[in-house]
Image 1 (tube, rainbow, N blue to C red):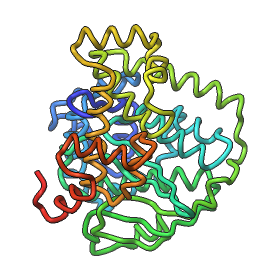
Image 2: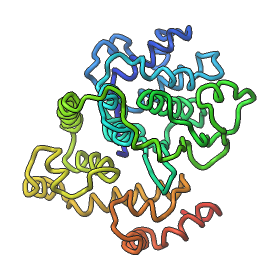
Image 3: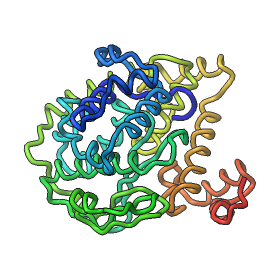
Image 4: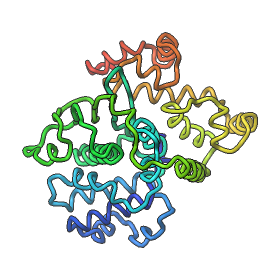
Length: 342
């Protein structure tokens, strides 16, 4: 999910603006300042280009006197009235499946970033992966998203998950009392990633009052909404968008993606050929972009990146990465850290 196709739902913007009003921010003034017609917020089934959302978010920060704007917006995630994403995760049978659904369907709210869920031995983590670098350097967006994640995990676990640590990429503010209140965990600032870390023992916990029949119905609806979301633009763009999600979940085989787009694999290949690309070329491009992101912006182990990108062996990923960049993954990360990589 890169380039100019990223969007956010009007529902999401509407929710943020309603919370901003509660914090006494003049949202009409914000709309005027960024050239946005507030009446567009009534069209809840529409999407906004990410550039417009960024302008709105930045203007909200400028207008707010709240030193912890992001935290206070994020912790109210479950006051979002009846959105399918939150109802869906509350009906997942286990914490692990709830987190996976949260990551899989988050783009129904917002495509600008993806929650990344990883497990390693007895540690689980949920981190932020942005698909654009156009957000100005601000702690509020990161704190908002981590607060949303913490709110989600707290709700599905009935507040039983205790975080081992919370990582922030920005410097610590002068007062972190609100951070301690919301996360109740050790706070680590000026880190490579923004993430929540907790023990994987919680993942097998049952979600209280989950309903499997309702979950099946909700998933069918969520998939239809995603099909609608990707029903515009070129086939290349649609395939690339879905590939990013598939790499982190059900696999990136053409059969899976063709099913998501409601066409046959053969038909999809023909459509891509007409656009001058192949499925494998698109997959290579998406894997390359994701690999560079993880190596450049996170400290995720190369063995874990291998699995995230759908490779069965580290050696296969290493060969592919060297073909793309001329360096192996370890060398690339070292060069990035030393400031010598292009």
